[in-house]
Length: 149
Image: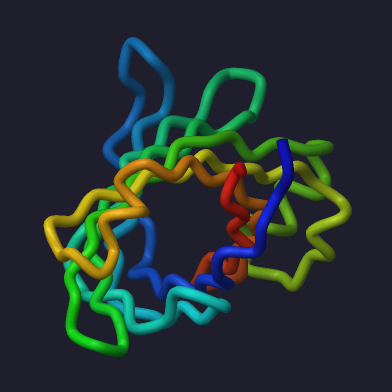
């Protein structure tokens, strides 16, 4: 098994909507408002609409659950879903929550990515699993995705 660079994603976000404490943890929804992605075989824009339906657990770990749509440079539409975790020392996570710049090496933020499309040019994505290392800024998530080959 190898990791093949897939694309760098910059996903722009609305402010966090706090839904409150649920049986699973503190539920938050972060709407996706746009962005871009660029890689060796995959590039285009992140379309507005979709979100991260996130849960922050008692220990401070966030469970990530995103679903959104991509449009490639040549007009194909792709569905992407990611799931993952973000956690780190309490002081680091507090700085991140305050919107301060934080070196992504100070916390753990990893994703599993799945794609779906009916466009013949990108059917290979339906059979591709990807993993990513991510970083959170005040208004975006940036991640480097790699196809598992």
